[in-house]
Length: 437
Ligand SMILES: Nc1ncnc2c1ncn2[C@@H]1O[C@H](COP(=O)(O)OP(=O)(O)OP(=O)(O)O)[C@@H](O)[C@H]1O
Ligand SMILES: [Mg+2]
Image 1 (cartoon, rainbow, N blue to C red):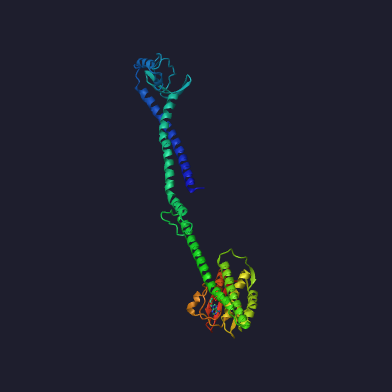
Image 2 (cartoon, rainbow, N blue to C red):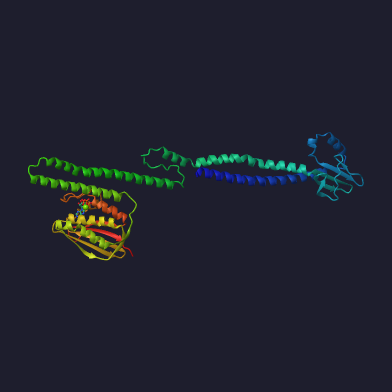
């Protein structure tokens, strides 16, 4: 539901309720005030009446008066000693009170309110019909409540204008966002934005920034990938061209082997790219389960042994402590496999790669230590960058392996680091996992 509608509805409802209460209170007070005023008038008139000298002329006036107006008048009665009661209105015989003060009596079909003054020689009574009194009081009360009723629609109008004005910055933002180009990821301006809505705008802007970074990274990835694939594909092209220039069967065989090698290299790059795209795409996390770290490491070692034997590298496990962790086993195998692959491939013939699984408190640590050439200290921070390779290696590679390691480590909440060994030449790769209790 629209915030504007809710605010307007609530404000109008509250104002109306308050106006109704205020109007009713004013009405009641005004009515009461009018009653008191009329009582006061009754007393004043009664006090000004003498022995009744004005009564004959008043009777005369009553008879000639317009019946519409005369209702409002007071009726004066004067009674002297034992004489007959005289009245300002012909045939008005409301019983005269015995003591001074206000009284109420029913006369005819009407209720009358009177004020009586008992003098030693005479009694004066001034009366007024209750119907008349109520009409006067109601009119007074209505006049008191009228301004409130009159101002109410005006207050509604002010509420509508006020709410519109308060919410205008939000409406402006909505408009600006609606009007913007679908490809525009510029931050939304938070100028004039109410304090309560500012965090929302900040969050949206930070989301836009992340989307922008993600699009930028995807774009770079595609560019890098295309660039990386271009070289081996160009080489393949050249090798295929060269096939026709072969002079002998042996030559042809050699070139076909070269071609197969080139194909394998391209296929490796594509596989690595696919893996990286998979792990960096932020897809929902895969199912994690309890994994024996030592077993997984041993399986990875078995898988890499053929390569180690071929390269003449002594690969073995030097420490195997019992450690259970929560992880996705396939991802874990790729992570450790890539580190082992690097250790074996970048270590020259006759080299050694020692793998260990150790437990330190609630942490399980996998270390892969080689005695290869190591990595120049200044290039170490860049090895996890996509497509980064340390120049000078004869070894083939796409420069993606460690990016995949990094992406998986993030997903598995593991810490991975590469450092040059302090004790000898070579690299120590360490992966730290949280151990299951
Ligand atoms: N154990 C190591 N010893 C020496 N250099 C290493 C070692 N591990 C990684 N490197 C250097 O870091 C670079 C990046 O490694 P990474 O695994 O990301 O890519 P790659 O091995 O070249 O290719 P890929 O693994 O994708 O086939 C490597 O090219 C290599 O120069
Ligand atoms: Mg590698």
